[in-house]
Length: 110
Image (cartoon, rainbow, N blue to C red; front, side):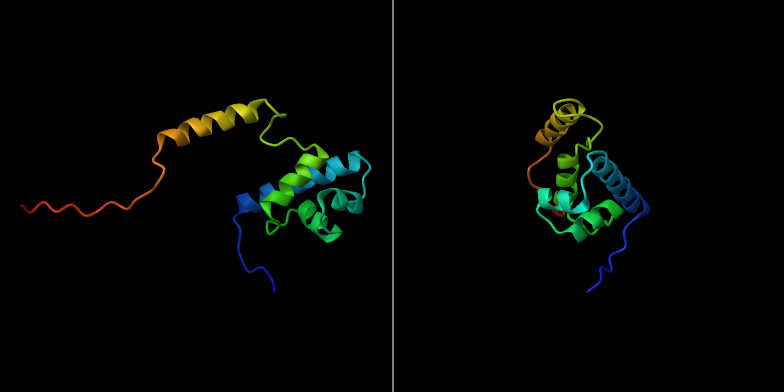
C-alpha cells in the first residue's frame, strides 16, 4: 500500500535537510548504510528512506539516526540551547489549562 498523504513543502524540505545531514554525518564517520541500520536497529531500506528525507519515516527513527550520527538538533549540543527551549516551553505549558474544553453556550435568559 502506498502512502497517499500529501505533505507541505516545509515538511518535505525539513525532512530532506535532516536526511542530508544524517547522510553527511554517516559518511564522515565512514559508516555504510548497513552499519547505521544495525546501530539503529532497522533495515538498510529504512536508513535509505531517512537519508532521502521520506516524511513517512517515524519521527523517533529519524531522531535516533541523528543522535547516533551526532547531528545536532535544535541548533545546539546537549545542555545548551535545547535545554533552554525545553524549560521555556515547559514554563508556558504550566500556565495553560491541562484540559481543553469546548465553551458552553451562555444562556442570558433569566
